[in-house]
Image (cartoon, rainbow, N blue to C red; front, top):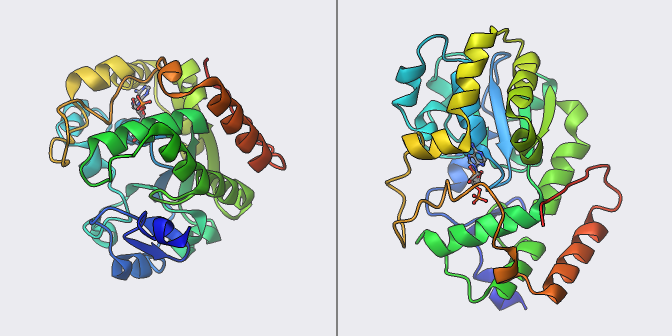
Length: 285
Ligand code: A3P
């Protein structure tokens, strides 16, 4: 149904949906030609996959001894989104830490010449769907979903911001050899946060002593991040006072939304779409 599909996007740029009023085609066009420096670090995520978590980790790894100063700024200031027209990417000082939700084919071309570094964080699609569903109910930027079933279909078809989860992850992963690339998962970060941070440090060739590593681990736990309001998104247009960005970090309310046939349907689609991919995902329930 084309007319229904058309309502899901504010504009589409080279096959990718943009819904929020903050994006402009002009900036996206410019961005592909941004000059990349060797010292640039890009965290790449599909929305709701641990973006803010990686912003926190990266900014602390590069914070030297000035942890409190780093923490006084919001994640968005510390590690800006390159797709936002006000990212100031070109004028920032090295090392530039950035984050992006962009699909592989829209990032600065220089990245593919193996300048800069890419850390891709993936999260299992069922938790991404749930987290995104909450976000759509929470932020006034997005249309409130008609029902969970309806939103699930939208997600599976890629009729959401940044389009299909499946395409995002497959494209980035299939093209990983074109980049200095590290693949991480939200689930591994949850299982072993210290190990995950260590892995990021190794990739970035940052050698931190145990004490510094301990400090970073502590600042990156879900409870610290939630308690310290590290991530100040007070300015987002909320429909409710609940913090939609640090919701809970666990997955407990599956049954509330997924009925048995929906779970089966989701699993079937998910397996079908990833059947040729070496990527594997797990989730709790
Ligand atoms: P939930 O909505 O499932 O709780 P993003 O930053 O890409 O928007 O991702 C948001 C998701 O990451 C939210 O998931 C949030 O709770 C989770 N998250 C953020 N920081 C986390 C942390 N330190 N530990 C575990 N989950 C975290």
